[in-house]
Length: 335
Ligand code: ACO
Picture 1 (cartoon, rainbow, N blue to C red):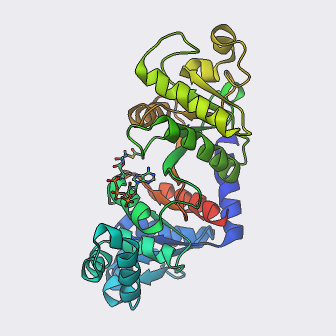
Picture 2: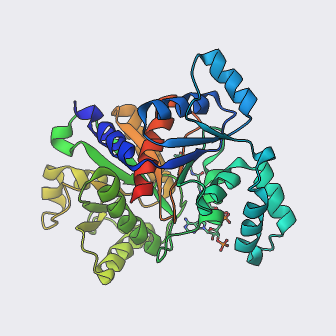
Picture 3: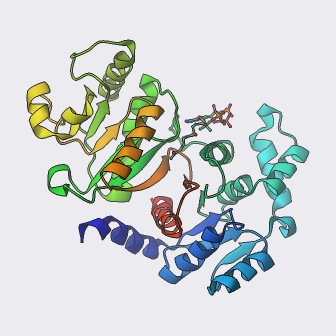
């Protein structure tokens, strides 16, 4: 069944890589339930930050077993000193002291979890069921930092279509829907490049990128359109190997008949599978509309550009959303 194919493949791959994924929100019943399911499915080795007795009580009430789930109580951890020392060192230029770093490590599980990844005590982190996106991202940016040679951290949603796959394909990638509010041309080019890598590593798909705006090849003019045109020029200058087209409207990007009319010379328009939105408002609204109105499954946001994977959950997430994002994150950690 097509709807399940992406997930089935991801779960299979996650099982083979056996990564340790830290879940900092052990106070959340959904996280506790997900951790048990992650063990049962074997998609990762879950490490949950929380109070052991409280978690076991919740598990008991829910009738689930936490066998195989590693639980870390930050208050009793012997790693706090090492983490605080490292964090103070990383943020020294920003005035971070050991005392302040220690306070952050003991009070903010997102920072403790990110430091576990930084120090090699976990391979990746999934958080956000109980914290806003910006809090999870800040922990990633401040503790993990960007991959070597990468300047921009951004995000992608894997949009799995449940209808009309014959026309649009099974999976499209949408970005950036959750990190950079107003990207520059340089950042749009970075998002395009990072998304092609995500497409290959997570979905096994060769990316064809459309940089979207409200004009197709000169049909309108506006400073906001110029930012997107410039992003296309930057990609050309960089000599990227993947196919892309800049300055297209969404319909010209994915509908062949529209592309034939509006930009017949483009090899990508009409068949793009990675849509790069001009800003966060458009991206965030765009993915939610496709998810709600077209019934697409939206997996993500998958954060791209960090040195190790940290992914963010929606606060409205279900247990399955957590399990699936952990599986995807484990696959990212293996790349
Ligand atoms: N790429 C690379 N580096 C970055 C990025 C980025 N996208 N953003 C910030 N940084 C750098 C900062 O410049 C800073 O560098 P420095 O320490 O050398 O000075 C470092 O990372 C730490 O950044 P902070 O100062 O801690 O964070 P900042 O205030 O810049 O905020 C954040 C970054 C949290 C990503 C912000 O841009 C944000 O809030 N984005 C929107 C998140 C959001 O609410 N999304 C919508 C909901 S998500 C959904 O619906 C799925």
